[in-house]
Length: 169
Image 1: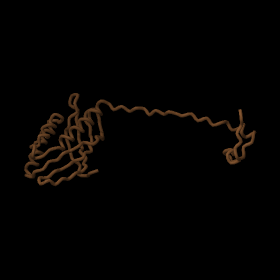
Image 2: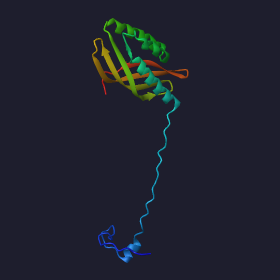
Image 3: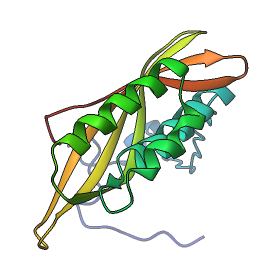
Image 4: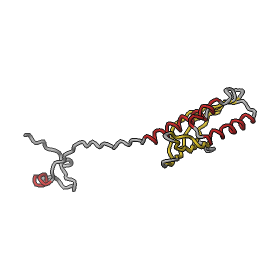
C-alpha cells in the first residue's frame, strides 16, 4: 500500500508533538462508527388520552356561544358534564342573557395539559384561541386558558367545574 506524506502541521499528535514512526505506532487509529440512539416511546394511558380529548372538545363547545344561537352549545356540553356543573350552566346562561348585549364568541382549543390527576379527579388546563364578535362587527381575538376539574363517573370523565383564567398567554 502506498503511503501519503503529509505536511508537518497535519502529522502532529494531540500533544502537539511531531509524529514519528514510533509515535504513530502508539496512537491507535480513530474508528468512528455511527450510533443510533432510540428514545423510548412514551405512551399515554387511556385515562390521559380520554382526559385530554374530553377537555379539548368541552372547551371548544363551552367557549363557543352567543345570543344569536341562544347558547345552544351550553346544552351540547351537558353530555360531558356532572349534574353539579349542568346546574351552574343554567345560572351562567341566565347571567349572560341578563346583560342584554348581542355578541358571539367562538373558541378553538389548542392544547390540553393535565395539571394533576388521581383515580377519581383531574385538573386540566386548556389553552384556547377565542374570537369575540360584538353586534356591529367589532372583532376581538385573544388567547385564554380554561381551567377544568373533571371527576370520574363510572368509566367516564365528566367536567365538574370550568373557570376561564383572566390571564392570557
